[in-house]
Length: 160
Image 1 (cartoon, rainbow, N blue to C red):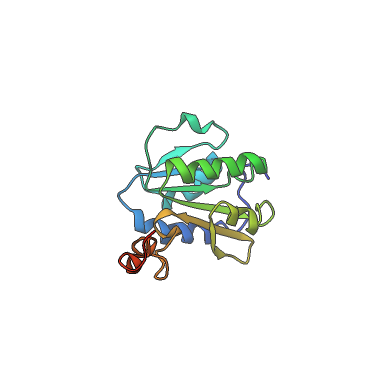
Image 2 (tube, helix red, strand yellow; image 1 turned 120 degrees about the vertical axis):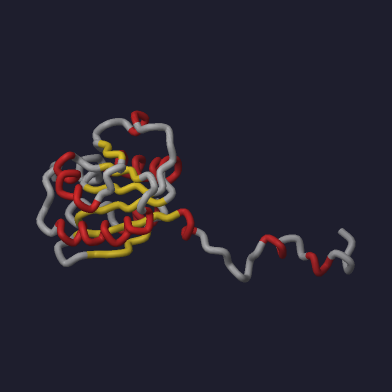
């Protein structure tokens, strides 16, 4: 699939409007081919940094973005390059990453799960929206807080 947009992009636009409202006024990175940027421009804030996925990520400004949107980029790259790009965005560049992929070129649920992404929406046209948000990635668990790791209730009972 080239940089052309398959039918059903209206659903993707409504997803972006809904999920980008949470990061309004903050820095946004958009990795998408020019055709995608033109189609999604009404939903994107004016201060968003647009980046072509065929350029190396090292050309990005050395800043951390509040959110990143990957649309149409996974279709242009090989599976290995696409996974490396998503991992780098997730680890170094964005606190939250939204990845939009079509079922015809989708990496598959297991590959996206391995990268820490969750599928949050799917359309009848085959579009899938994945998200990685570091703030909700590893929620605190009631049964395993750090305070109990050293068994403080046994401090005066047993001698190690």
